[in-house]
Image 1 (cartoon, one colour):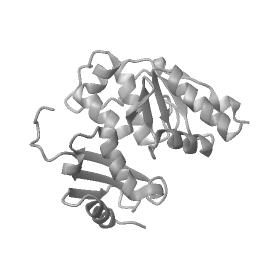
Image 2 (image 1 turned 180 degrees about the horizontal axis):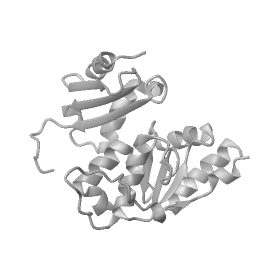
Image 3 (image 1 turned 45 degrees about the vertical axis):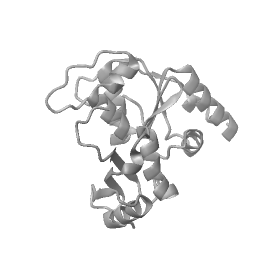
Length: 82
Length: 135
């Protein structure tokens, strides 16, 4: 069973330099919420940003990781108009 | 129904319904909190949309994710394009982008935006009937 820490480590390995926080939302080791701030997201659509994260886990999303809620951001200051 | 027929049905549903939501359960009876939020956002915007419950047959989800490249449910399509899952739908709902995309007025939100409230009216939803053809 994956832990929030495992997920965080794997996202950080896939997106070096990213600021990552992961919480286990139910404590059951299968529902997680991940918030990621990374330069890699610059110029990508939200769909593409989320896919980068899903791709880290492949088939585990929907399997061992029953639910993975994602919030992605670029490092630009909050409220910066896009 | 063969896998190819299911895939064809999904493909058609995406092309023929301007706003197409694939979810667990129905707008009236969502079977998962994420699906409930996505359909609740569409209900709150008052847009007409088609919804398909993916639960009756595991192949629906397999074929859908194969087509979209998106691993989770719900999945919202507008004008044939994947908009996102529940996180993206909710972010866009709260920012007003979803209303803009759908060409409707952003509703007045309470202090704590929560589209899934008691008086929601999922009357705009119409089933598209794959579940009747799976046997």
